[in-house]
Image (cartoon, rainbow, N blue to C red; front, top):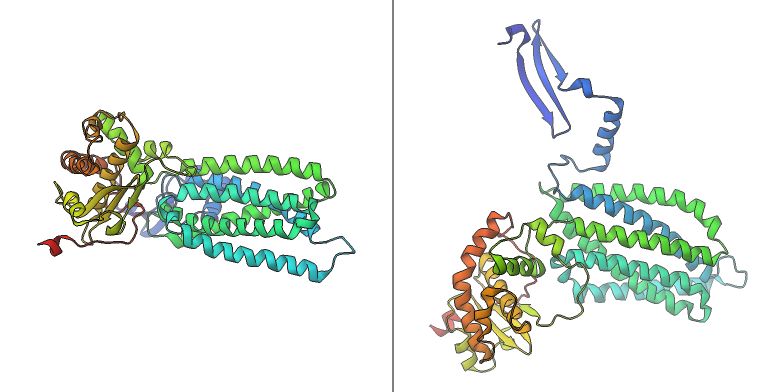
Length: 435
């Protein structure tokens, strides 16, 4: 036991970065750093870097994949900055910078047309795809960066086609506006995932600081590149190809490093198929590694969640068939090669997951003959009959399977209190009307 005059009164720590103790010595309270012998100027510089560029409370205040994602995001931002410099130089040359015959009015009109078409493209894309950016954040994040590279390549090509220059830069402007919407929205979705202490604003602010530092480094390197590529189209294309390759590789690694614990349709399908195959629920990391990150142009048997009742029911008999063996707050049907789900207004999140699971099972049965999962082969036997028979049998199948599956989801640390399933806004009330 320590003497009274050497007693430790209290200890404190600042996150995981430093720890201190308060010791009573000769009647005076002194504050001492724990592990001070390992403290050096290098560690103080590292601590200052963390304070400036990382969210407060790092690493406890962010998700486990934060550092890996930010590293690759920094690499891609640096490569994109250099590619952007080459594209900007080409655009300026195309509007007449350095050409005595070019007029200010012509250059201004070209720039205004580019900005105007870009604004229209931004509005149109947000209207068409805005609701998809949450549920498929990784896919659209990668799509945005690929499209950004395409836009910059078009801008570099534009000066070589002077008669079509305005049209080409307008197309590039539309592409870049789409990149702005998709990139900004998906970054916000990833920030929600990374924030573990409701610190989204802090993470977003520090991400901005990191991006500013990277852009500053890119600016310094660009000052060296510009004299080299001026009047040298071949070198411009070679450097652009190298920077673009690095940019795309870093982006792929960045989205692959993200481990989201919320279920969207792709992750739910992967986890469910594995469970039906061997009874094992994949961890979030395992499922995220298998999740596709490139856009699928068309699914063989798409699932439509939250549809209007008229997409499911054409005559009163259809409603009776949809309710057979069904006491759930959702209706499922097969229409025009799609699995459609109507949701009741009082359905819980767990019931939403159950409805999506049933729809995924039906989609698998319809597109695979026979399905690879042993558990679905019995359900597949109903496929040759009326579609409503298949739907009815699927309700009985889910009654046996879903509760154990939901329990295992929770044990595997999946979030089941919220999802990223892409539900539309239609909600149907049929039980009170028929009672």
